[in-house]
Image 1 (cartoon, rainbow, N blue to C red):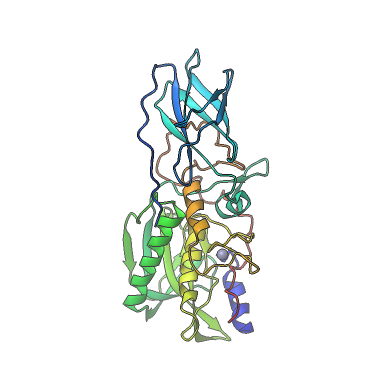
Image 2: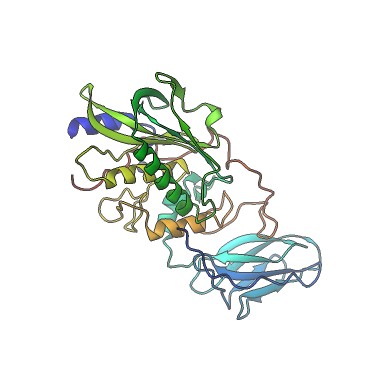
Length: 359
Ligand SMILES: [Zn+2]
């Protein structure tokens, strides 16, 4: 096992690397006049309305949400207004509204949700002031799956080997990555844009940093070479956001089958931009062998997906949206990623993904 671990350490040099549908309240009536904004405070996790929240906007008197969570701002002039929303039991939110603009629900994060874990999980980029900043895909990714085994010993390229992955294993991988996509995106992406099977060509070398893979998630099974030979161990490698990640969890015939599922989903999380968590909150992204480890997606992973995809990329801790964003007009987001490849700082390069406890 020591030999395998040493090989994995080299392999992983870069980074180791059903959605709940909440009962939604009735649709909001439009704002009553052209110079007003009607909002409704809702809980981001369960969709319930939040009464008695205080909304303070630039240069306007504070207003309080009613029993239905609704509030109206009526500035004297049109524009974009910074608002701060405070409600008992919720994290204070700083965002902006456009007036005139359509009515909109404004979600709040419950204080019981672990923001520390969320920062590690979904806010894996750094803000200039040193605060955690949310990273997520804006467009539905495409998926490419290699049907032959791969040599992943080079950190930024793969070589397609001749041995085929059994069809049933390829099908199972697609099932696992699909359910992971839905959970990690809070139900925003129920499926990939499309799924392509790559059958070869055998011997081809592929540069994982090539821009042609942007917007595409590529996944495949890597042969683990131990002491110069294929000892039957396998890892999973998934390339997605900005950098190749490699499978940390190692499986082999005779070892627990959950190892493969863990490797696939965990590495896929990295491909979506997720980082390791270190708290005791259970997550499949956990790096904490003292408490947070999980073999499968957890309640936290699903909740964190909802929170992440309810916020624009760039949202920072504790809950502040980036300049230019408004809750009712967005920021004119076009398809694509948060920022170009190469400008993304994971901050934790060089770590191995966690191995499962025991065996
Ligand atoms: Zn990892």
